Amino acid sequence: MVHHGRKCIFIHIIKTAGTSIRANLGKEKEQIKCGGHLTAKRIKKQVSEATWENYFKFSFVRNPWGKMVSQWWYNGHPKVRGKIIYKSKVRTFKEYILYFGEGGRISTNNPRCTPWLVDDSGKILVDFVGRFENLEEDFNFICQQLTPLKHEEDKSWPPKLPHRNQSKRKHNGGNEWTDKPYQDYYDDETKEIIAREFEDDINLFGYKFEND
Image 1 (cartoon, rainbow, N blue to C red):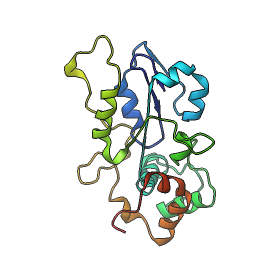
Image 2 (spheres, rainbow, N blue to C red):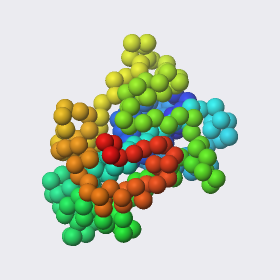
Image 3 (cartoon, rainbow, N blue to C red):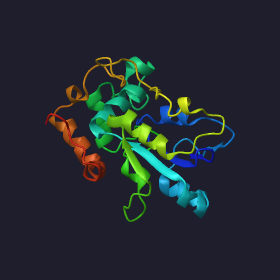
Image 4 (tube, one colour):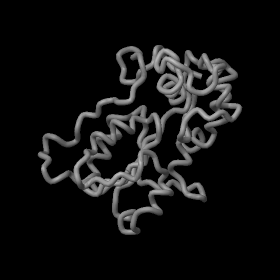
């Protein structure tokens, strides 16, 4: 998303609170959307060189083990959608991860974070990469880099960040909707599948399976 009013470019990676972030950036006339989900590389090709160089470019990433639990609840869990959207055999989280590990398509967008943010040489194209696990603090930092809109008063910026596009249940009163900690979903096999499939994210952003 390119927002000319705030002079920023936001790379919206799925299941990283992107819907909430987009909503809080505002939908004024100054905003121009480049689709719902586009990579940094693609947006760079669509905007002028001056826009790309002068606007603040940012995105958010997320621990891949937690991210895949969230995506399971949002896209695949029968208690959320009332039906299986991939294959009839995908009825549990383990089957979901096995299906993904075998190359099954679980989303219209790539669930991995790295491909959204790098160029052909692997260089990160954005100015700042926030973390879902540090959402409020990182979003507040981002807001400090952005241009306020003309009608905004100091007290209205930065906005409080709500959490949208959540799944069915909350865990321990937090802002991520699952029925238990992500670690409880995994066994050794599924844990290793995520480690393999998200190797680039793990290496680039230093993520690990917590309490390992």
